[in-house]
Image (tube, rainbow, N blue to C red):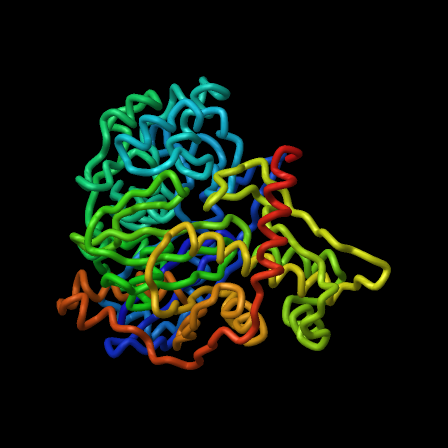
Length: 471
C-alpha cells in the first residue's frame, strides 16, 4: 500500500493506492485562502499540516498500517519563509499572487538566461524579491525558503529537501543542469544555504519521524521526493514520454507535455521545467483561473452548488447569444504574462440569466486553455484529462470543441497529483521501472471535437487585445 498526499490550493487530497494501482481509500480536506489586498493570495502553512493530519486520520486504520511508503505533491511556486528554529515568518505567498510584477521586470533578463523561463509574478523568486523590497525585517530573518509540499515534508520527516520538478518552478533552478543557479539566487539576495537540498521525485526524501508516525497511525515509512502538482499529475496519468500530454482542470488550468530534453520557449510564456522522474523534462502552459472561475460564477449566479450550475448550462444548450467571458480573475500567465488582466463578461442583455453566465464561463475557460495549447506549438494526437474539474461530460465536450483535440478521460482522473505522488512512493521503495508503474489509467470516455468554435474564439482573442491597455 502506498500513500499519496497532494497539497492543493482548495484542499489537501490524500489517497491510499494498492500495489496494482487501485485507489482503495481517499479523503479531501478543504483549505481556506486569504486575499488581504488586490493581487494578493496567501495561505497559512499550518493549515496545510492540520489538513494533512486530518486527511490521513480519516483513512481506514487497517490500510494505514499496511503502508510501505508515502509521496508528496503540491501547489507549485508558493513561498514558505522559515526563520530561526524553522518558525514560519509570514503567511505563504501563493502561485496565483500577482504582487511581484515590478520585481519580475528586474529579474526577467537573468531568468531567461539562467533558467529558460520568463520571470512571472507567480514564481517563487520574484516573491522573495518583493519581501526584500517591502518587508525587509522579515527578509533579514529568512534562514530557509520551502515550497508548500516541502514544508509538509519538513513536518513529517524533519528534512529540508525539494524535488527537481517543484524546484524548477521557483525560478532559482538551472533547469537544464538540475542545480541551483547561483546567479538567480544572487539576483534576489539569497544564497544556496537558504535553499533545500535537491533530489529526484522517485528518490527518498526522508523517513517519517517516529512521533509523527505514531500520531498518524502509520509505520515509520520513507517519504519520496515527490513532485510539483503538475509533474506528479503527469506521473499519475502516465504522461512520462515524448508526445504524452494532459490537460489539468483544477483551480488553475494546465496543458502539460512530457519530453526527454530541456526545450525552453520563454518568448511564448511557456514553462520549461524538470519532470518528476530523472533525466526527463516537460513544457506546460498555465492559466491562473480555470475551475476557480466556475466556482466563482456559480456563487455569483446564486446556484446552490457547481453541479446545479452545470445542469442549468447544459439544459440551456449552445446559443449564439451566450456572452464572451475572459477568465482572468487572477491575471494570466500563458500566453499573456499579464498580472493585471481582469475577468470580463461581454455581450450581456436583458435575457442573460445565470445559466447563460455559467455557459459563458465554461467556454471562456476552454478558450483560455486553447490559447495555452497554441503557445506550446506541439504536434499532439490527444490530451488526457485530470483534476477535480474534470467530472462534467457537458464541459468535456465544450473543452474538446474549443481545444480542437480528442480528450481522454481516465480512471481516477479527479485524483490527479495525489495518485502520482503514490506512484512516486512505489518507485522509490517498491522497485520497478517508470514504464512499468507509470502506465496510463484505463480509458473511461473519449470526447472528439464536434462544433466549429473558430468565430467565437476569434472574438475572445480580439476582446483581450482590445481591453489589455485598459486593465
